[in-house]
Picture (cartoon, helix red, strand yellow):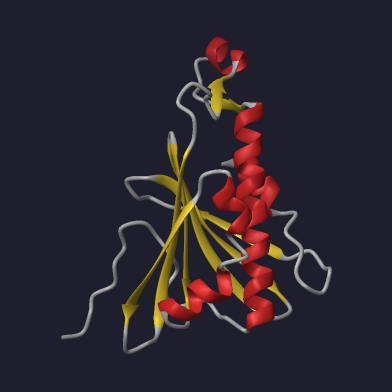
Length: 174
């Protein structure tokens, strides 16, 4: 995830300034982490995960599913061309929050990372990201930048009190 963190640190907001990006590794079944991307217009949270060969991108947006899909259609248009699929689902009707989650299957025959020779000789477990892996990490960072800029333009907010996560379906009121 170090390569992804480095790529995410290059995210630029609508005003042309670099966003402040914080990362917190998660402890879920799927390897990944939460990114808080702060701009002059607000804080936008996403969760990115890897369960090779599948990649995950999750965000919660304060609106209904129809509006989220409409506002984000061009944001994720380029990502769809390389295999990403997106879903929009209301999960808090009382709070008007939608879960936006994307998945992408990468090619099994092209690993995203390989064990480094240094780690093998020293008995540690580190991996070097392959060129193929760099493509996907950059793609995710571009998608995150597009997401932030679209949210800024459309005045969409992400709920700060509920960071996105895999399989973390909030309890519904009955």
